[in-house]
Length: 97
Image 1 (cartoon, helix red, strand yellow):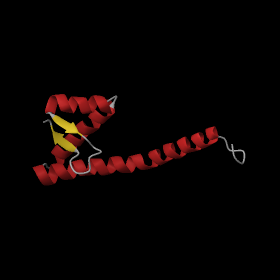
Image 2 (cartoon, rainbow, N blue to C red):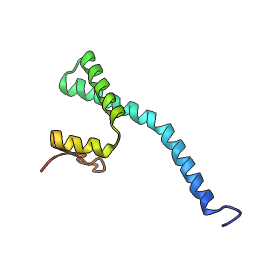
Image 3 (spheres, one colour):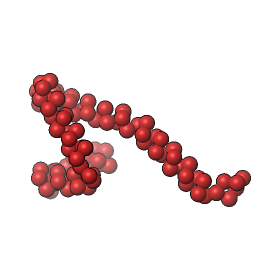
Image 4 (cartoon, rainbow, N blue to C red):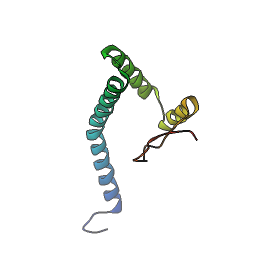
């Protein structure tokens, strides 16, 4: 304890700051990811407006209905054979070897 500040106070302040930062950043990160999906579908695969809209609605439904990111990652591996290693800056999506 120093100057009346306890370790619990520090933990609480850290958690509050983290939560506020997460809440502020999440919408912008989500918008960027959704825009990237649409741009990839359009530029790389020639999707038009309606196909992009339907694909993004499907993506959104998967996000909303996924209870746990581990479950989603496991499902991608089992159904598609892709491994998601999003901490890998060079190859975040890898084939199952």
